[in-house]
Structure formats: C-alpha cells, structure tokens
Image (cartoon, rainbow, N blue to C red; front, side, top):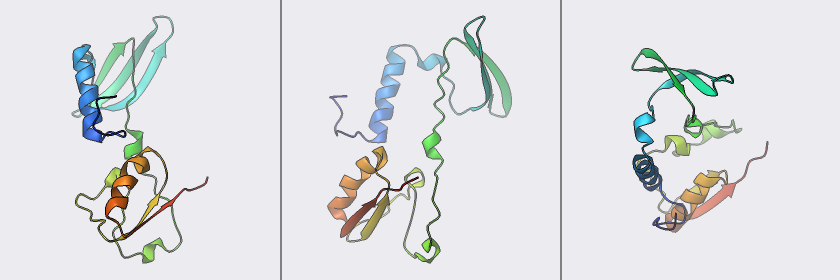
Length: 139
C-alpha cells in the first residue's frame, strides 16, 4: 500500500487497512472471529462449505460459498532446541510472544530467522543495539 507510513508496515496499520477494506466492501458482517474451527467440508454438489466451529463454548454450523482460514498459524511459535540455550541468562522470546518493553539499547542481540518479521524488527533493533547478529536456520 503506497499510503503506509513504512515500507514494512506495522501490524496495527495493516490491521486497520484490512478492517477498512472489509467494512467498505461489506465483508465484516459475514466474518466470524475468535472461534475454533472444528471442521470445514466442501460439498461439490452445491459448491459450498459447511464449517463447524465453536465460539463462546457453543458449537455452531455455517454454510457459505467462501471459506477463508485465517488461523493465525504464525502465532504459535516453533522454538528450536539449541544446545546450551538453558545456560543463557538474558531475556529471550519469540516474536509471536514478544515481551513488551524489551530493551535492546546497548545490548548484543541475536535474531534467528530472516523472514518478514525479521525484516520488520531488525532495522529497528540495529538502531539501538550495541551489536546485532542475524542467523538463518536450515532444515
């Protein structure tokens, strides 16, 4: 979006943009959020989805012609086991569980990964950190 404040927009700006689009095109009224999807089955004869989900402790069913699984899969961190990590005494976190107020000023900082999140946080960290090292893992 050319109107974003930064090339890699912050989450709140992306969220506001998506919300504006959904409101503008009447999508919001058909969205269900904060639910756990139990199953989503496509019925070829009717070309519709039957979605069974749980919200507020109640199981519900919805039939629709569109199903968008915005499951937030990146909010469940996958933290690798690194020999010696139990000996590290400083703060450590996954960006999906970021520690508010974490101070990088004059610290030696390590970022593991080079994906979109790293692209967003590393330029800001390097402005204040004493040293920033970035590692890319391999499968």
